[in-house]
Every structure is written in C-alpha cells, then in structure tokens.
Image 1: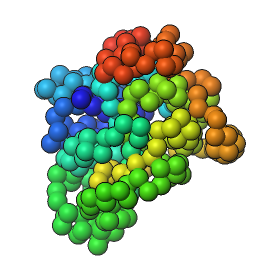
Image 2: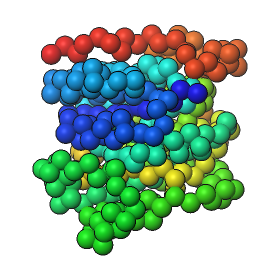
Image 3: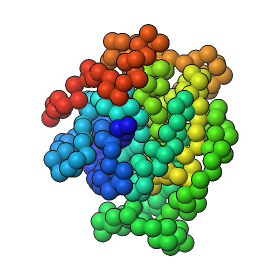
Length: 300
C-alpha cells in the first residue's frame, strides 16, 4: 500500500528543508509527500518546487491556502484529498525523522486503529548548530543521540530506542490525551469516516485531540507508536495562542460526548460525497477522487 506523508508548514523553509531531506532518506520508498502549506511566502514555494524536481522516485505535491491566520485543520483536510495513498502519516514541517520512520509506521499499520507517535525535543542551541553547520543528524545511530542527550541537546533518549512491545501497544485504545498532530498515522477511509479535521478550530490548539477523540468514538482505536516512530522536533518560539482557551473548552465538552463523531466543518465541504457506509467502496480505495486543485500556484 502506498503511504502518504502529509507535512504541514508555514513560513519556515529552513526547517522544511531538513524535514524533506530526512524523508528522502527513508529506507521504505513506497510513499509520497504532500505538503500542507498554510499560506507561506514565495521562499517556501521555491524550496518546494526545487524538491519536486529533484526528489526522484518520491513524488511530492504542494497543497496551498491563502494566509488567513492559523488554519491547520483546513490545510490538513485539503492535503488529505490530494493524497493517493490509503494510509496517511501527519507530520509537521518543523520535525525531522529517522530513516526507519516510514518503514516502522508501516509495521504498525492495523485496520480500525490509528497510530499515535511521540517526539523528542531539540534544544535551542543544537537547533541553531544544525542550521548553521548543516548537520544531517538524523542519519546517525543511537550512540550519537546518547552523546547529544548527555550534552542536553535533546530532552529525552528513550523514545529513540526501538522496542517491540507487542500487545502493550493496544493497552490504552481509548486514550486520546497526548496525541500530537506532528506524528499520527491513520487510514484515509477512517479520516473520511469522521469528516476529517474540524475547521471550527481556528487558531492554535487542540484540533489534534479533537481528531483523536472522534476517531475513538467512531470505533477507530489508539495504537501506541512510542519506542518505534519518534520524531525530532526543532526548537522554535511558541506560536501565538490567543484561541487556546476557547479551543480547549470546546475539546473538553466534546470529549464527554461519546456519540460525537463528525466534524462540524470538515472535509466534506471540499469533497461532495459524504463519508457514509454507502460510499465505503470509494473510501476504501487508495485513489479517492481529488477535487481540491493541489497544483495551482499560490497568488504571489
């Protein structure tokens, strides 16, 4: 099965460059990259255009929406419709992955489950060194990261250790807390089942938790990705969070309603066929129709 990696980004081409470089170094080559661009400027566009030309057998697509503030849910929905893969991995453009990332996500794939991965935080000092010295640190082994941990360049070492875990991965199937949108794996048909991300979450915060809550309510359970599919998160200043409290209260209210499944303002607004059992055959296809024009150039 083709996997689609959706990479969200906004006006940080240096970080996106590292993210894409690490994806092109993957051991598993049966995947594509769909960039979910929340209104970046032309510097990001030029970078993506260069990668599209040079990526070789890995196909890269660019989805774009105008800059109207933080609209992560909207661009993720649009990017989802641009995907050709039957399984989607959501990744943020300020995260870097190890060469085994896609391969290990594929190992964890299981119908009626989504995979919740975790992250390792990179220090401000080491992030600066990575950019200044152009360090391809993601290609290194565990000993390298052990040294980085001792030097406090990364906050944790344990997530970088791969462990089988087996049935322990499905020990907390209805736990939605600490699901991070920078590292989620889910079947595309299950995204359609819950009408995608809810675009009512405008501004930073809790759209990921809402997404996980609705998946669980729909019968798609959590599978633990810890000790298998970590991401390395580059340091950056905290985003504006003026919508945080509103989004948090909405998410908490929804978490108490086990019947709440469908996004109020979801992916169906772009795709005319609703996610219902009548359309199951279409949703099961790896090649669900794309109606969003993913190849239109942004209006610079």
